[in-house]
Image 1 (tube, rainbow, N blue to C red):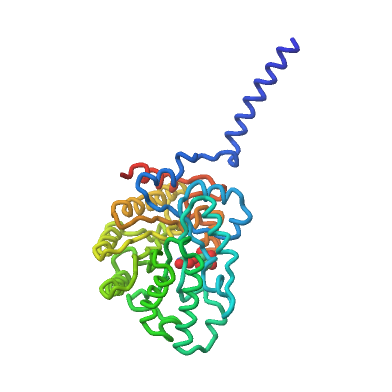
Image 2: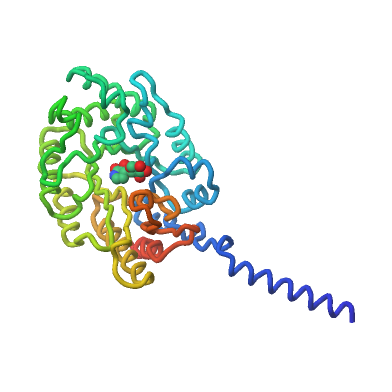
Length: 355
Ligand code: XIL
């Protein structure tokens, strides 16, 4: 009799353990190493990546696990920006950037660099310094040689120029344009190429994915660069979208095609999809978001010059959108508990069906 009770107890114990396992979100890690995005990306050979923030990389083990499991490429979200890496005129600070590069090396991931020149995230000494044109050119050259040189052979591609074009297609007002003049654009690419001739160099823009004055302006500038032999590899389309502001997929395709015809690569560099301005139930919003992710990856894969698809983060837990909107929006492909969303499934399915 005693033995009989013991047997029932053991059976009940095993059954309840398996139920707990199924109900506890922290124990569900759905994608396996053979169904991860990076595994599925082997088919198309695409670089599938995410922007990486230092704090969670240091403090959150699940963040590290999911990042390494899902992606074959990463890009530092802030750690290589001018103010972070060159905080004083004669002082560079590589600690954070090095940590990210080391993580990538250990996990067999490629690293993209972001960014050599932007008008935002500049240190005070640079913004407030009263430099002559020659001094500022010297500072920029030194910055590019030092940063690109340090990671030569480790960083495969750089967002050499970030966000230099205004909505109307003209050059955006910035310290670089005002003090150096429009030739600063050529110089960034030339200096970066001198510092690492093997690094792919990109011109990265937001809201330039469709056909517009802005993408026309970008097209005019980079086609002139190509004609003049400036070492530009391609353009980056950031793809910060929202449910209320969807990309026009036909236009995106036409746009990618015209840059391809110039012999340039096009990469998707910072995709996220805000849901706050969407309509319908939560489940409908998640469907719309998933469709947007799937459509953009699908378009990218349909062009041989689009070899890179990167997200600006990967979990809603740490998206920059939360700090902009002040709400928990949910723009990425993993939720705050690292559960894959429908948007994850959409990307997985496009990768799975790719040639
Ligand atoms: C954002 C980061 O995600 C934030 O953490 C930071 O506070 C501001 O910059 N386009 C870019 C990125 O090229 O560098 C920006 O990153 C997002 C928009």
